[in-house]
Length: 300
Image: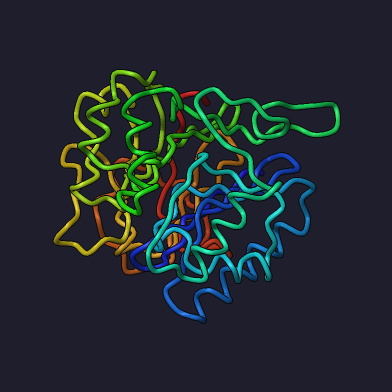
C-alpha cells in the first residue's frame, strides 16, 4: 500500500507519504487552526507509530512550511530531519523557526543534495525496502545556489533554497515537489537539472504565478496532473492546457497508489471542476474522502 496525502491547511503546505515499505515521510508542517492541527497530527501519529523508519522533509524555513513544527515534535515526533544545509536567520524568530534551527543543527539532521543516497530513503536492505525518494536539486557547489544560501544568511529570500525531489513507486506513480522555488530562480537553474517525466507535480509556491514552472520544463516533466495549492485565487497560475486539481476547492487530497492505477479522493464533495482526464473506476467513498477518479501512471 502507498498513500500520499496533501493536507488542506490554508496558505501553507503539509503532506505525508505512507510508503509501501516500513517508511513514513512527512513533508513540511502547517495548519489552518487548532482543530485542523490536532486532527492532522493525530492521523499522522497513528500511521507513524506503525513504521520502523520515519522522516521529516523540510523544504525551507518560511513560516507557512514550518508552522507548528514544535508541536509536531511533541505530538508525532521527529527522528530524522531532512533539509538543505543552511544558516538561515530571522530578525523575528517564532517558536517554529527556533525549533527548525534546533533540528537543522542537531544530530537528527540529514543534509540533502542532488543524487544523495541514504539507507531506506532510496537504498533498500534485507531488513526493509526503501522510500523511493530522490533529489534532483540542489547542486551544492552551484554559484546560483550559493548565492541563495548567502541571502538566507542575511534573513531574506528563503524560497530559493527549496530542494527538488521525487517520490516514485515501482510500476506506479512518480510525483515531484519543488517547495516554494520562485520562477526567476528556476529559470536560472533549469538547464542544470535532468528533468524526468512524472505523473503528478505539486506546483511550487502553492501554485502562485510567482512560482510558475516554465513551459519548456513542463514539456520535459509532462505531468498528467498539476496540483495547485491554496494561495489566494488572485495570485494563482492555473496552468492552462494542463490537467489540474485545485486544493482551494478540493480540500484534502489523497492519492491511493496501491494498484495499477492511482485512485484520487478529495475532502469536498462539492468539487465540480473538469475531471475528464480521470477514469471512473466506481470506487466507493472511503475514509480517504470522496472518490474523484483514477488514472494509470506512465510506468504501470
